[in-house]
Length: 213
Length: 390
Image (cartoon, rainbow over all chains, first blue to last red; front, side):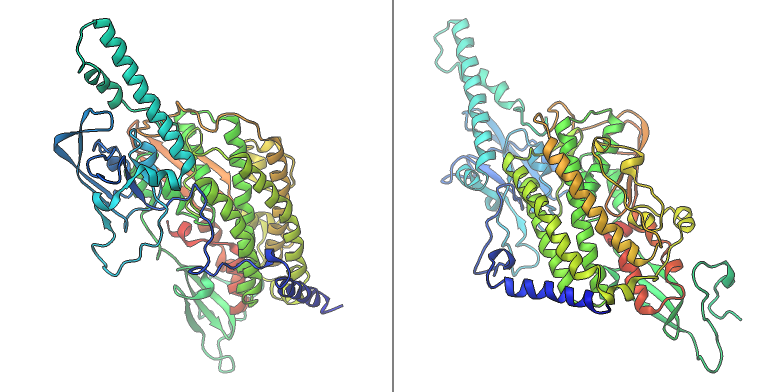
């Protein structure tokens, strides 16, 4: 009979409309600024730079300005200048650091390739998405001061990934110390400062990061 | 007397056009629909010549969203092109990723782990569900059912996007496939939520079909509208649900058997009339088959590595050669043609976009139809302008 299909469809919409009063699953809208959905742990937005300490972010950046991310970034939104001098890193080894590290988040397409290629676990993806600014030109160009966030923050947004990174870094550090100790023992020379120089190559060598070697 | 400048009527497919130009009928009207017309699915423009309400000529104009995709990819590294493929057909980033990864894997001779092949099938079929659900909503929106079907479709789409987001980190720009596998391993909890979604999807489709399939207005607007003959579809290179709705049983999942598709049992729905209603129904039936594939894949997925850690991603320099990969995307055959000269970036990079090639027969389907029907016909072609223009 003509019209049965229509009536059947109307029954569906009526069921959905009335059902929304009883069934939470049919009531799907989140009223955004007041209500928020929980972000999944894997959610990514823009990159940030990991530093070890919140008190001295510039002194404890993991980044050694190797410029791999700058070369690999598909839209070329990263700009890095190497420092002329060296600063000690978390293992006490003197390292070059980024004198300039800019990310133009207006250009960035949040693809995560910088994170995958970084051999130092120095750049990770952030989850902050409310970045509206009134300045059209400068506000979305993030310099290293705006990008640096402590490892504890990384732990809070990506706990699983951060746990893996931390255990990997710790293992690398312990291995380097162990190697240095055996090297020092082999030399059998009473040099207390000996552990540091042999630790250098292993700390500088790219650590095995699962996605990309 | 043929004022519209068309070829002789007898050579055209479809019903004869009433392009009578006399005092009674008045002049022909050339109407420019788009690029900012809500019915054209993005920045697509149709220059339609009308005799009354009947389309006597239709010229598709595209390129407004051209972003130089292929040339950018020829300057980028092999890995660097992967996120750009997300932005071709931005509803189906997972299948775009897969087709591109397949091309590079063949070029570099990279094997794919078994678990990754399963995950790829799962994600491709989820993408098919997502795309066809959206298409049904958009098609009904084009037909004048403003709101309800589209909102129901988007409610379900959001559930699939939540899965994509919790796996890859992004709802639409997934950038998930890698050469030799996938980037992140789906957790058991993720697989469970995928199973729950797949189990509930059949019920949603039942509800959706109760709303639409038997609807008299939908039938009146789509049955017999925009017929596409199998001969024309084949000679124009049309692929995907468009081709199958025209009655040609051609599905690359069956023909090529790429990935692990030969391991799954599924049927390929085929239309009888090649009209807009068939194109709608073929997609609904394909979704039901996709649910079957997903059930099998989620049941059989093995444990194991998702990505070979030795598989080279950065600084890939495949040896000189050329390769064409194709998979059955939700819109049709999405293919990538790469020529390597041994350097760090492809010498030539070419995308075979299904929606552009499916769009080439738009005029043939619209001739003799009314202007309102041409909107529905365009909706049934299922275009995404990010892919048409690249």
